[in-house]
Image (cartoon, rainbow, N blue to C red; front, side):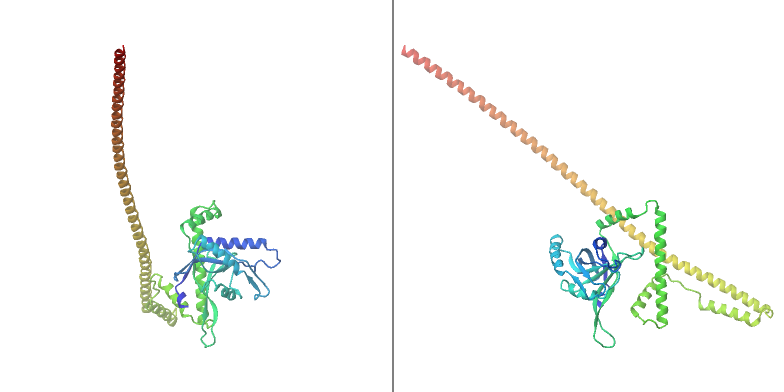
Length: 399
């Protein structure tokens, strides 16, 4: 249990869409007369579990699964199908490993531990993801994550396996966020403005906060009444939540004491037998009480202001750092563009000079070849003249 104490599970939106699509396909193609509310689908989840503080679920695929609703011990899961699918997924993305399995819940079932044991042949510590496909809660996320552990009983009896709940979040990559935004754009009512959406979201958030505070109060009351055992882990987390609140101080003991004294004096003296001295004392105590309440209300407002100013300071510093980094990147980009332009200009000048040099050398070669051709032609004409003269000379000698 200690190794999963600070573990959080990150679920990608693609996994949720795949599970819902799997459930809808199975539900539509099912020809049995069983109750569809108890029908569930099972599949395999892929991701990265190397970091124990954050387990990432990035992909999933469906597997053939059947179970008898009357007898939960009778069920069928095709583990050979998992082997063939994993071989294909390795060719696509070798980084995604088999880290567990999912089903459409909505809660844990009796044979989940047995199915989890079969998945141990693929991964040593399989993770169970339950996706409530029929969730009507518009505030909470419809996912629950569990991992099987050995629970050691305090009475010394033999240990047994049980599921440990892990907190889960919905986290998307940049590309997935774009797709999710497009889906939400189609689902959202276009007639509602941004103000109405913001007010609706704030109302839902406050409703969720009220429900959680009600659950906390109910749990504490049941612990005080002895209906539930004391859990130091839960109480420690509640104390951490309370420590995050501003430094709010209620009425001091002195204020409460003075108010009690005033009530006791009025009750003891009665309305008719109250002397002027007692009335003055009561009036002075009431004024002191009012001043104390006003001072403490100022302390309360100051505490809220300090807390708000601290948070705004963090936002301001983070925005300032972000702006400086963006400005620095802009300057680097301009410097790189300037260097690139200078390099292109230099290379262009060199290319032009080389082209001019090549053109000049080619023109010189052309002139040299022309002179050689002229000289060759003149030489041929001279030879022709010499042969003509020699032939005429021979003819005269013969005569």
